[in-house]
View 1 (cartoon, chains in turn red, orange):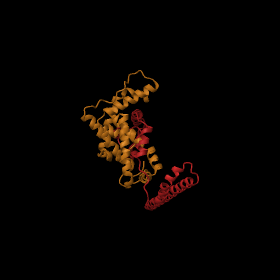
View 2 (cartoon, one colour):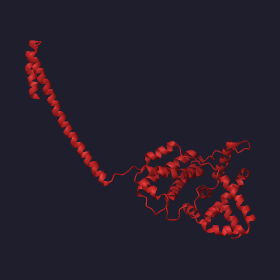
View 3 (cartoon, chains in turn orange, brown):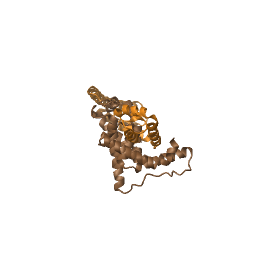
View 4 (cartoon, helix red, strand yellow):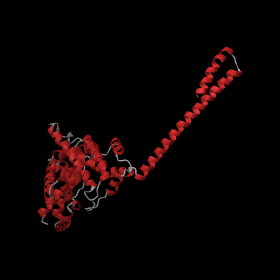
Length: 147
Length: 186
């Protein structure tokens, strides 16, 4: 490698031969060994520029940017097995809901029936207002029958 | 640097594609700072750099589930996306005639300590921004991003000889523009 070529490469790739194209490093080191003073000065001058360029501002990610990127990242995909398990769980939940509603309706009817029976018994055995009881009793019985 | 055919990010990208949050975090830790730095040095604007980094990774999230090993290193793909986004923004700046030079920080000889550091950083950023676009890209990719000449040349769509020429011309211009600062780093 000629000194001129060495200087061209230093101008392009900087003062650290370790950062030059890999296929040129061995020849560059051999050239440097043959002229350590002259070519060493070339490298030193380029290393000064390298250090200056290293001072070009970079920046770090702020928390908001990281948060947005984490939020937008892919989520785990369900496997086929998990899909079927989810479907089964969903069906089970639906069945349980239907059963629960049915039980709820039935128990609600029972409660209302009990309340009406209590009212009928109260009206029969504790007639605080006889006239009212006489009028109310058929109505209460009708309601109980409807249930 | 990984050799050709070897992608140090492959396992992480596959993890991201499966929705593994640990892989997402590790990939962001490893690559987001590099992409932010690339965008900042190409655009000389911190807000636009954040926007470009965000868009780059949003595209990466879409790409990850169908990523095929062997087509390119993921880091190179990220650089290509970010580079194109930066070029789009620079083109829009020119087209809309709003391309104010990046905010020039007065590099007068008055600063000390941190202020001097900020001033020097601002001077270098401004000098980079003043370079022709291809020269700036070459220097940022090779010097700041540490890319090899073949990888950088492929990314820029030029030969390695052309890349060397872009680097040489760019660095000579920077040396002249920053000559007064050279003493500060000796």
